[in-house]
Image 1 (cartoon, rainbow, N blue to C red):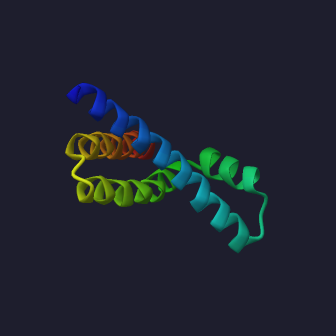
Image 2: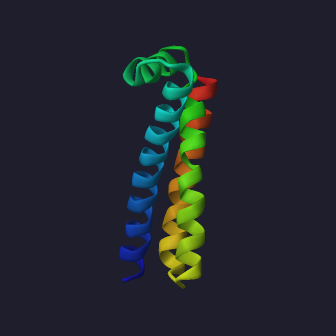
Length: 96
């Protein structure tokens, strides 16, 4: 039961991070008046995709505190794990 709750939180955290990346990229493309897919490709090729990953993890902050407020502590742990995965991925992308 505990593993299932943590895995649910992990899955929701990864989905939340993906949605956050999409939202941030969409807002940047509107502000820069650029094509959405071209902007993501430019960040990926330029080696700056780690920035989008870090900013996309802000959605996990809201998820984490929402789960804590609803007393779903194991799901909050899963979201925290997803945030750590995003941070490690960003670190790897930045330095490699």
